[in-house]
Structure formats: structure tokens, C-alpha cells
Image (cartoon, rainbow, N blue to C red):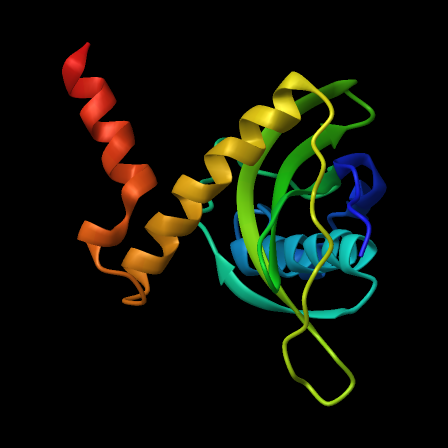
Length: 174
């Protein structure tokens, strides 16, 4: 199985915020954005895995700016690391008011997907081969994010999170 570069999974998805997507303040409903992000991330993960994928986890999603009725949402997604049967996908979300000519970053998040075969069993995924400094930094941080997800999900004991412990001990030595 050949490895792939992050650029091979890069996905851009655009959506126009319509009245049915908003709350009573004419702001985009958070659930609608999470839905769109899940679709964009799944497309990115499928490009990397060449398989059907399912969402395994969603990290913290914070809203930095409200997204308004009429804004155009741009979601950029790409795989940041591949594990045995799963991939981590990072997304950056931008909101653009085209008539005003403004664009701002609204959100960022990490989603994890598991690749499946036709019977629904987990399958191995291709290795990720980061090429740029930013890609290497995201790749290296993915192991710490994964360990944190596993701890919070009750699937790993904090004492077993060697990457996270190393991060904290390194900070104490400074």
C-alpha cells in the first residue's frame, strides 16, 4: 500500500447560508455547520483511503465569529495523519460576505474517520507522507491529539499517553 501526501486529500467545499440554515438571530445554526464539516471531512478521508469511511470522533469546535445569513462558507479539509485503520482530518472554516468583500476564519476542528470494507469491517489505510513544514507539524501533533481523544473517550489510561506526558514534562523543564 503506497503512502499519500496530504495534498491528495485536500478538499474545498462551499455552501451558501440560506434562511433554513439560520436561527432567529439570522446566524448559521451550529448543527448545520457541523453537518457540512462532517461531509467535507468524509470526502477528504475517502480521497486518502479510497474507501468508505465513518466518523469516529469530532474534536472541540469553537465558534470564533458568527456566520450570517447570506455568507458563503468555505470548508478546507485535508488528512493530517493516518493511523492503522483511521485518519485524522483537519478543517478550517471561513465565512465570506461577498457584497461587503469580507472574509474571516470562523472555525477549525479535527475529525477522525475509520475506513471500512464492503462488509463494514475496519481496513488498513495508506500512510500519510507530509511534505511541508506545516504538514509535518500537524502530523507530529496528531499523535498527541489522538491520545487525548482516547483518554477522553475512556479508551486509554492517562498513564499510557506517552506523547502527552512528554509534552508536559518538556514544558516543566523549561
